[in-house]
Structure formats: C-alpha cells, structure tokens
Length: 149
Image 1 (tube, one colour):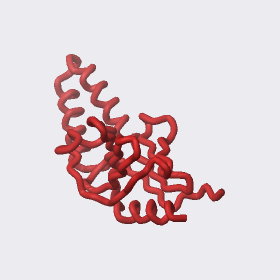
Image 2 (image 1 turned 45 degrees about the vertical axis):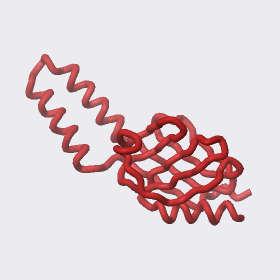
Image 3 (image 1 turned 180 degrees about the vertical axis):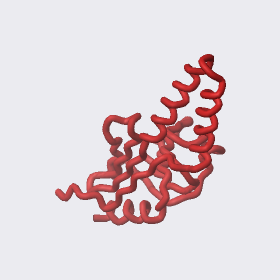
Image 4 (image 1 turned 120 degrees about the vertical axis):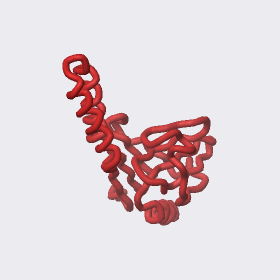
C-alpha cells in the first residue's frame, strides 16, 4: 500500500498581530520590574508554545490524518468509512468556536491556526470535524479523489 500522502499541509501561528501583542505583553512585564517576573515567565512560555505549535494535515490512502503538535503526540486518523461527506467551507473561528487552536463544542471538533477557510468533515458518529486550511479547495479535492480510489 502506498503510504505517501496525496495532500499535506503544515500551518503555524505566524500572524503579525499575535506576535505584536505577545511582544507588548513581554515588554510591559519587563518594564514593571521584579514584581512581574512570574508574568514574564508565563508570557514567554505561552509565546514559546505558540511558536512551536503546528497543525499538520495529510490525506492518505487509509484516511485523513490531523495532528496539532505539541498537543497531540501522534496524528488523529479519520478513516474513510467514518466519513459521510467532506467539503471546503468558510467558517468563523471566533463566532463558531471562540477562537483558533484546538476547539470543540457539542458534536464538533475544530483544528484551526489562522484564517476562516477549512474543510468540514461530517462523520457517521455525528461528531463532525472542521480542519482549518490555507488551501481548503485543494484539501477537499484530495479527499474526494483519494476516497474514490
């Protein structure tokens, strides 16, 4: 069996506004002096976590793989037989899920790093998945093409 992905995307938190905000928080905690050492440490740890976080998405012969590192140690696989439909869509990360990252609400899990486009995957167990993508149409096409093989 061919284990090469037909689609692969790696996304990271690289939005300028986010890094500007974190820089301001770090600068203020330094300016406040020794009282804010704990605040600086927490902000620096958060910045490090965000800098190293990444969303990896792959479409393979046996399903869709999603890994939100460092929160997932190994990729989460969605097997083809679990999928009812998958389509490219626009969504509101803030409006629907309260922001970006690994988010959930009843019946839906979302993996989102930036933007408002992704692929909504309807599953047979009524636990849908939304995967944010900078190449949503290509991602959905790869799912459709690979499922038909």
